[in-house]
Length: 166
Image (cartoon, rainbow, N blue to C red; front, side, top):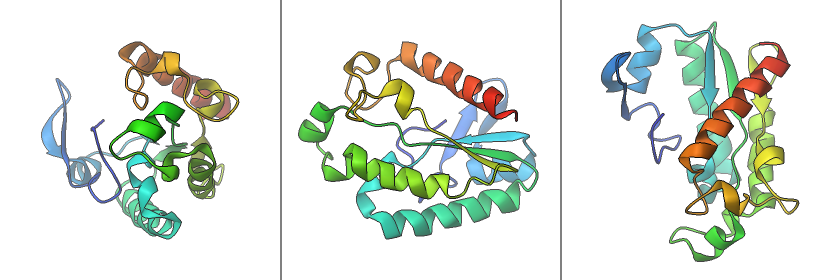
């Protein structure tokens, strides 16, 4: 995991996992070890660049991951929504974070799912209210889940993967 990633930086940023691997670029990590499953949670930071940019850069990202991890099952996690207040007040807020716009980007993510080696899951039904905004109780800042809810999110991801049978 890495904070503030987007399609342009995700493979270039250095990451570390205490006790598992030293700090290195994600691209190098993916090239040096084959994984059974890769969960991808990316897109919110890319939502402001427009649909065409999103599609083009997601395609590049997926091509690279597929090249480096040809046997891995890839699970694309739909973009988690933010609260309405966050959209209205955050420094980088704006209409690109509205639920209907994130839904369009999630459809692009979902289009990669083939049921064989790429799968799509969407936590919005679990973490969003009836209008598609992140529940206020899930977050401290309106965008990121609290530590407690990151654990819940991880459990939800595991449940979703289990239910897909992968």
